[in-house]
Length: 50
Image (cartoon, rainbow, N blue to C red):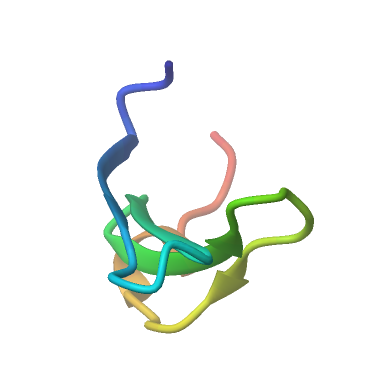
């Protein structure tokens, strides 16, 4: 597991997983699929390759 993929939790209805990645919060169905970012943290969004 990547160090940036932390703080997972399952929703009370058991249908969604919430997790943090690069200081943002994401939601994804427990059955899989594309995760949806629900917060925006500019620290990682504004970084540029060296």
